[in-house]
Image (cartoon, rainbow, N blue to C red; front, side, top):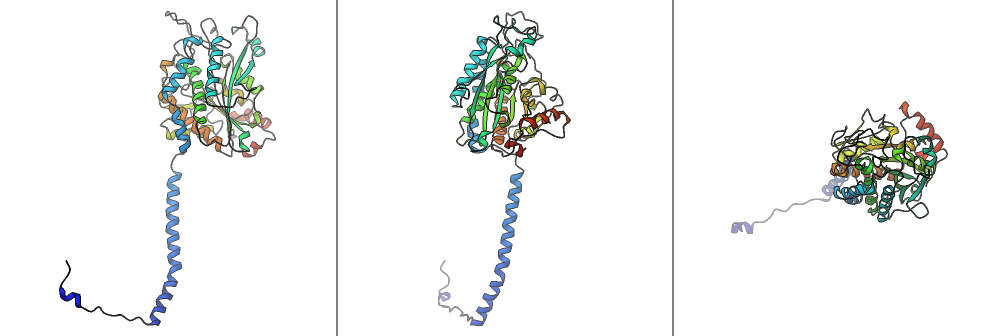
Length: 409
C-alpha cells in the first residue's frame, strides 16, 4: 500500500538546533560515557565469573587428544590379549617356566608395537635373578634342579616432552606371573583339585587383567599427538606370587633412579565384578595413605564408576607389588575391583569370567589419572596425618633427599 495521494505532498516540519544546544548535548554525552563503560565492564565481569564458576563445578575430564587416544582401549582388545595370556598354552605362568617366558615375549611385542623405549641394553627385559631371595623359602616353592631362579621384568618407557620433567617418572605396573599348575602351586593355594582333569591355574584376573591393562594403557598413550610432560614407565613383574620378588628386584636395581620416580600405580585384579566389591565400583589399597585415592575418585565421575575408600584396603596394602616401592618411600597404591573373588588362586580363574566392559572403563579413568600426574608440576605425597604412613614418609625422606621433586611435594 502506497498511502493516500495527499500525504505525498505534505511538508515535513523543519527543526532548528542552535550551537548552544548542540554543545550542551555533547557535554552531557561525555559525562555519561565513563559510567556506561563501567556498567559494561561490570556486566562482562559478571558473565565471566558466572561462566568460570559453572566450569569449576564440572568434573575434570580428558582433553580431546587423550579422549581420542583412549578409543584404543576396547573390551574386544582386552579380551583378545587376555584370552591368550591366560590360556592353557602358557601353563599358568609360574616363575620360572617356559610359559612365563612366552608371556614376557608377548608383552614385549606389545610394547614394541607401541614404540616404547627399550631401556635395558636396547631390550624390554630386565633379567632378574631371584635365587638368593628364594633360598629361605625353598620349602614353599618348586625350585629348578640347577637351583637357579631367573625371570624377566618387562619394561618400556614412554618419554615425556618437558625438558626438565621428562626426567621424572610415573610407573604403571602389574605382575604377569601366576602359580602354574597342580605340580607347582603347593603352598600357594588352598583349593583342592577338581575331577575334570583341569590342572592349570590360568590366572586371568590375578593378574592377567592388570597385565593386559598395562599393555592397553601403553598403546593408548602411544596414540597421543602431544606427549605429557613427565615420562611414564610401563612395567610388568615376574615373581609376585613368590613374595613380590620381581618388584623387589627392580627397586634394588632400578632402570631409572628411584629419587626420580614420583609414583607407582599398580593394577591387580581389575577384571572381575563378582567379588567382594560391588559391580560398578573399585577401590585402592591404602586409599588414605597418599593423595592418589582422591585423584582416582575425582576422575571416576566421568566414567560412571565409583572409586571409594574401603576399610579393608589398608590390610591389603602390603599384598601386591606397590609395597616394594612403598618401602623406599615412593607414593603408590594398588587399584582393584576385588580384594577377594571367587576362584582366587583357583583353577577356574579364566578369561571367560572377566567383565571386559567395566575393565575398559576402569583403564580409561586410570589413564586420566596418569595423564593428570604426568602434566602436573607437583608430585603425589604421603598423608602426614595418617600414622600408618610414618615408615613410608621416613623412607621417602631418604630416597628423595636432594632431589628436585622434593620441593614440589
